[in-house]
Length: 250
Length: 228
Image (cartoon, rainbow over all chains, first blue to last red; front, side, top):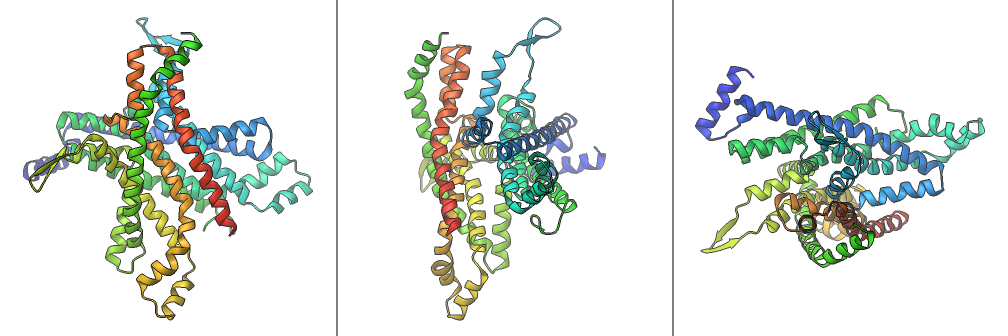
């Protein structure tokens, strides 16, 4: 941190009572940066895994009519109509103790999957259910004649999906995908409840120590607006890069 | 623990936990009612001609739509005073009521977008036609545009309610004694690790039974209105 920045924020505190410790106190700013990094890691990992879950689920719904498709539909319905927080508790408090535990260097039992990993698992499954719907709708928006043409050219159903339908369907899915990923970014705060030291968690520590709840609340709000803005911008940049005339919004 | 004793224990706690769920329902009903009302005004603001009201309504909507629910909840729990004095009488604001305000804000912002989308989806020719017939802008909105929007707004509004009811357990994090807090209290008094999965599972089922029918009906309406 630059000396000028520190001086400015110390002045701000003395003159106006706006106490932004994260800009002049080394300890607090370090904690805050850790929180932002954790949140960004959560978002990045969960975007990655939830898109994979969404893709696999949408492909299953497209290709099969059997029990596998019913299972995917059941999973989507269950996840979308129950609280994310309770899903997280179910995994962290319910499933985790049942799994075999490892041992630390001094012989204490350590769960194989820590709270950060459980947060990634539950958030990816949660956002994945929403992504399945987006990708399914995107595939559904591609005109049937494309599949018929591909089949007529000798593609198998799987090849037609892989080379024709999926690339076109993806372009129809971007709008609702962006929506899901913004929701996912917002939902990472729920990991606070299982002790993941993400942005809200560290901010809570900071305001408990420095008694600047109001300032920190506003800082968090601004940081999340920036984060969700970045997600929207990234998706629309991808959308522009992959734009094909006539498929999806311009 | 044997399966039968697990089932017996879950059943023993059911009345206590269901009473907690009643608070979730009360919070969600208040938040959706007040949020819909506020969101309607915000939505009108977003389509207003005056640039000041339009830009400010749009900014408020965007900020509160993109803020995490949990952050807004902390905001309201910590920053709304515990009691307010109105005309010499002190009104105590319990934490569940402050949490309700925290849920109302994002509901209003989301509904504002629903209103804006619905009004925007009516062909602009209808505004022009009404103007040509001498309708004032307000009369056009209330008598011509809005009646066509209700059916379009119903499915997303129901989805918003389903989203809201599944968000209410967040209130347990800030110390509101709702269904999740009560479940955790029950688990603590039982001190049986075998109970964790069944209890949380039962809680998931409870929310599913409440929210899933709403989502289903919303989907049916959506299909019906899209055909019309």
